[in-house]
Each structure stands twice: as structure tokens, then as C-alpha cells.
Image (tube, rainbow, N blue to C red; front, side, top):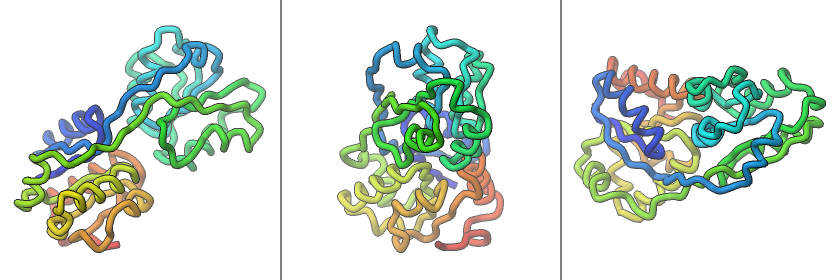
Length: 248
């Protein structure tokens, strides 16, 4: 089975290895290019806790030696928490993979009197965790740490894979990736090719970025995590999409 990953390159390479170890063939088509945004070092030094919702935000903290390894950090899920734990952060709290569980975790673990919380985010977000925390009485602010810019076009290699029907399943881990992939396929005139393929998406929100009628099937992960996505692909490998898929 041939999988196409649309995640940014850093995340896609790591996921590719896991999928290849499962015996899957994997090609990469990063739809978003991530670049870091400069901000004052004092931003990190003055913070009493951090909120991170992507691995890119986690890496900004992990790679800064001035940040105390015992500072509380609230991560949206396991993948986001991993870079921090690898470099020795000892107070990393991990939510269940979405904004709702992350907010619930912070409100349960932290009192507003404990000081400022900094939400390190991307330029484009669907949920402003700083504003959500402020509504609950916390001193919180958002700091943009990186920007994810959409590709201008599909690569020649990706277009050919789609035209030949070589791809069995395309993985989407974010709404923006799904949305821009759809637009790029239309621009490249390969949208019709997707009708023979399955889309595996992280959530119903991610699925809303796709043309739901333009796919053979769309499968939604049971939880907003990479582990749940890998479960979908393992099921496809072992039993086939036809037996276990339910179209949206």
C-alpha cells in the first residue's frame, strides 16, 4: 500500500519512518513550509509556564538553554511533548490531542495566581489558547513562534503519482493542509484522480478542508493523535479500506 504524507517536512520524515517499519510504501508531499519567527528572548525568560500546540513551538523552547528545565509546559499531545522530554524538561503535561482537552488540562493543573502563561503558536491558528485562558482569569499571552506557508504548487513527482493512480491513501493532519491540498489539486487539474483514493484525516474539522465528494472514501481517526492515524493505516494494511471504511 502506497501512502502520501502531506505534513511539513520535519514531521513527515519522522512519520515516514514509522510507516515504513510497518511495511508501507511512503511518499512525501509537504503542503506547508514552516519557518521560525523571531521574538524577544525576554518573552521566554519572563514566562512562568508555556502552552504548545505543535512540535515547532516545542523545539523553540527545547533549543533555548535559558529556559529552566522545570518550568511547567502544557502540550496538546504526545508528539508535541516529545521534543521537550527528550532534552530533559521534567514538568511536561500532555493533553489528549485537541484544544478542548488542553484547556481542561491547564485549568485543572494551574491556578491563575501562579503567574503568566505564554502560548507559543503558529501565525495561523484555529484556537487562541491565550484568549481562552484569559476568559478563565489567567494572565496569558500569545507569542507567534513560527509560520507555515502553503506551497505554491504540487511538485512534478506528486502530480505524476496522482495521475498514475499510484497512491492508495493520502494523510491529512491539519485543516490548513487539507484545504490547500484541495486547492493545489484543482490548480494542477488532478482533482479527478482523487476519486480512486482514500483520505485519512485526523478529525472532522480536518475533513472539512476536503471536497467530500471527490474521494473514494474518507476515514476519520478515532482520536486527534498520530497514534490513532497510524491505527487507521495499520487497519488498511491488514484488512483493506473496503471492509472497514465508512464514507462521510
